[in-house]
Image 1 (cartoon, chains in turn purple, red):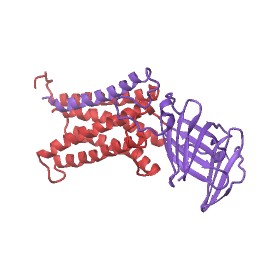
Image 2 (cartoon, chains in turn yellow, purple):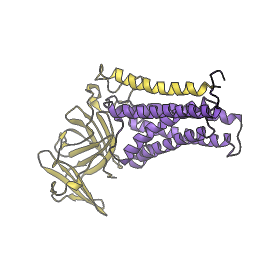
Image 3 (tube, helix red, strand yellow):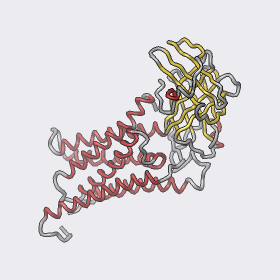
Image 4 (cartoon, rainbow over the protein chains, first blue to last red):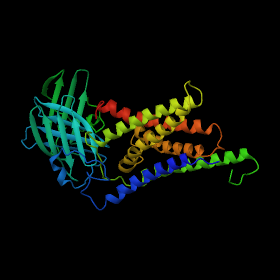
Length: 204
Length: 185
């Protein structure tokens, strides 16, 4: 004797999976700009100002982006790996923040455990967004930072060092000893390649 | 009883279950192949109120695990391994199972579509394998359930396999998310 309930459950479940997957496929090629509004799901909250101008670009699997904010005061680096991201804000003297977050397509959202935030978007080439630290906001537009440029970190018992090496070779770094901040000593990106931070590095 | 039966009902039972396992393997391998071959898509769905769809998946996955634990408990009661069985247990088992699979679907679709079958590191590989295996085990269980001639051990084994796979899935994703990013939405 055959029981039909489980068969119906099975067909519905696998059918639903196929429908969701093919619905995605059907929607994408025709609407490259609709990256945030697919498949009838509730819309994503709009946070990054450039959301509307999204061109649908998606972050590569692994990359680091670095640059200065528009005032030139703060260096910003964002490291991506898979769907995880790490960012570092650093002015080289008295302000720094390590943030972790997630990548969702071409969008990255990060947060530090002290409340600093970074929200940015990838346009296929550059990463633009806003960092908020305390009461200040910093807009940035970051270039890809391939080695020896990139983000570096070293952690010992009570000391954490962070460096952003900009694509032009300039360095911005801070040495944090138990909460006391000071400029970091110069880093040799070649010999200290092991200190490179990826989107998966644990920083908090 | 309407279908033609071979002389030995045991052989029929075994071959029917054998076919169920084959179909389950085909489902698992099919999903894995799709995940490996399909070029990752760009659509990023999110649900209002969550920081990212990764967070949505984390909570849907956690819900699926809770439902799976209900599955385990009701199954033990149905089989008399725990006291307090009854006809309600069958209903609860059936519907918690359907709900668990239902909430797993958007998660699986997102995984398969955006990420695919990956071997980036041990966690990701284990998660990819467990994900495909879960739907294979689920398929075997549904097919075995629909046929009264299935061996007695078929349901506990297939159900146990699905539960184990879901536990591995949750540990390699939601637990990882919680330990990495904290218990956030």
